[in-house]
Length: 309
Image 1 (cartoon, rainbow, N blue to C red):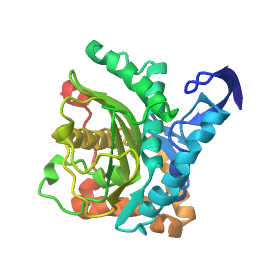
Image 2 (cartoon, rainbow, N blue to C red):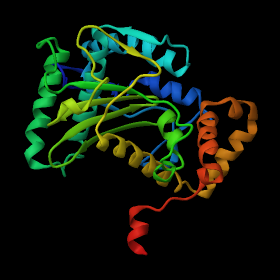
Image 3 (cartoon, helix red, strand yellow):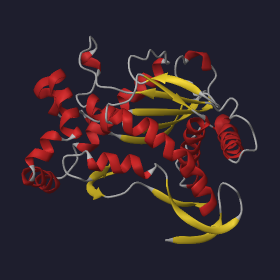
């Protein structure tokens, strides 16, 4: 399906493609490794979906531009990491920063176009426009680097034991390992684009007063190396808090799945028990059961429930 309009990236009048906001290989992996072969979106958990979110954003030339960076990211980072066959040290080229910026640009422009930034602090609105402009120019090769609108990457793994058990939601491993999540997070003084691609977390700075709070996570424009395991990160507390709260909200949303849909999910599992038992979904759930026992399936209260008490 196509649409005649102006390409949001290059600004040329063209036939726009129906572009994926999150690259399709991420969605394909999530479905292929699930226990059912389907996925559900957090804003509509009772509906099964076969594809990720898409919008008319790019002309064919810019779509292919993005694909040049998505292909090495998929082949050299995403797939090896998720299949747990990656080398401990992974070298990357200029395509990694370009890929990260391309996804942040897509997410941020989508949030702006769809009105999701209506509550954004007025003092940070100029930073949104500046980030979009800077990322656009970087992607088009008109500037050598994204400047202060830099990008960071963290690799996520299962939590198998912790002394902070009471502070974690019972689905923490299912969220860390299995969920796709995009957001534009902000406070009165800082803002960032949050992109969770299952086990990989990308963060694009919009306004970050203290970038030195982040260590071991910054992506380099030209070349760099990162560890696929045993990597030490230093991140601000608010990012960890945000991640945990996101897992908690995800658990609450999924609890709202109707009894009819729960029955359908159970029927699909029963049709192929071997697939279900060998799926990454089951594996992630096992980590939560090992940590929390039966509490891994307990109901959590939403903020509205708490206010009603």
